[in-house]
Amino acid sequence: MVHTFRRLGSNIAVDTESGAVHVLSPVAYKMLSYIKPPLTQDMPVSLRYSLAKYDSSGVEEAYEELYSLYERGELFSDAIPLGDISKALSTRIKSMCLHVSHDCNMRCRYCFADCGGYVRERTLMSQKTGKRALDFLIEKSGGVRNLEVDFFGGEPLLNFDVVREITRYGRELEAKHGKNIRFTLTTNGSLLDDESIDFINAEMSNVVLSIDGRQQVNDYMRPFEDGSGSYETIIPKYKKLVERRGDGEYYVRGTFTRRNLDFATDVLHLVDLGFSAVSVEPVVLPQESEYSIRKEDLPVIIAEYEKLALEYIARAKAGRPFTFFHFIIDLDGGPCAIKRAKGCGSGCEYVAVTPDGSIYPCHQFAGEEKFKIGNIFDGVIDENIRNTFAHCNLIENPTCADCWAKYYCGGGCAANNFHMEGDIMKPYSIACELERARVEFALAIKAALAK
Amino acid sequence: MKHVKTLNTKTYASRAIGSGCGECQASCQSACKTSCTVGNQRCERRVDENTTKKNQNTGK
Ligand code: SF4
Ligand code: SF4
Image (cartoon, rainbow over all chains, first blue to last red; front, side, top):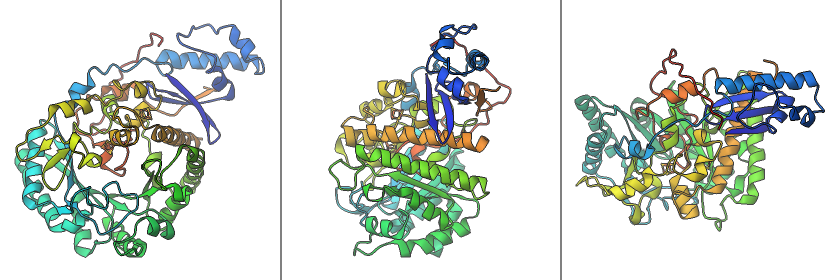
């Protein structure tokens, strides 16, 4: 499969299966719309007529070059033989989202967790449950050495003592079982203080700091319980954390909604505040919500990604680069095809555990009874549900199998599919269109920076 | 080449070699907790530079 597009002034062809990305001259680009595999070494005569407006020696040259790519397996290449991905998926658990707090001190308007309540009452995870969750993870992890535990909520710092104790226990388990646990934490920032900042910087391999961008945007969407804005409280705390973090990984992460479709301004606002690793993502809410992204918003959003991409290039060229999560693509050393094909691994390699010890396919399914996989105390797991999720992969999902962007996307989000389309296997079309546009911009940025 | 500039230095080989060992990070665990994206992730194992299995074309 070959996908061609023009973005940011470059003609680009992506050979989906090999992962090769080619920047093409105008004639070679046009030629690709006329040729189909198998290619012959001699140029088909018809191309001369189809491309009559181009210089004939140029047409011949372009064909020769495209043919050499084809021969090398970098154009119209065969599908990667991957075998039965679902088997590879259902055997072990290696990543866990620990919902240490189903409570929150903010009232973000778009919160999928229903303000930390997760549809039920507000609860905190006990130390005992947290420790048992780690035991369970170790038991189920098989031969995998690198495990992941994300402290999530609600707001995890509402249960900071337990976070600390679980981490300490995790270090004990690492030594005992020869594992490496990467702890991460996602916070709304409001409760950060010297003690928690130093703990996070010492123990968390990544930390996600939530903020939406400009003060008016953030404060409208992310108010405290009393309705007041959070921006002024969290900014100095985030700055302190990042300053003390040194080279450690972090992201400031925001959500954009229908109210700020000019989100590039929010990304750049965060960058200008001194945060160099930023992720801002489209909200996922039912169409009837006043904040939801709708089909008619897509052209505006795509134009906004373009604006951001141009600024990204300009700053990189000026020696002031920043990182925007969705513009990063490693063309040479990214993950292997199997990893790409199984995507997030929700319900299989990845699970979420709620304060009462229930296991769900991921944080966005927490509280949905029909998706409950089991609980950590008896360790019994509903293999039927796990199996359903194991089939959510690029090979078995027909829409994804035919998508040119599949090896960058990984197959999308089962939770979004379920909440928006009613079926974990049915890709949420708006998310797909945005994902494909972001990948095009990410590749076009590479092309522009390689010029 | 005059008409083509390939942005990758290695392609199919590096992608196909990995065995799905599971040592790399889960994709939704990092900066995006509301969507999936794998193109920006890293492989935990250094792909052996010498292994350059060639892709075959049978014309699909
Ligand atoms: S963009 Fe959509 S169709 Fe393409 S791989 Fe991702 S989820 Fe599947
Ligand atoms: S289903 Fe969606 S939210 Fe859940 S882990 Fe996968 S990508 Fe993330």
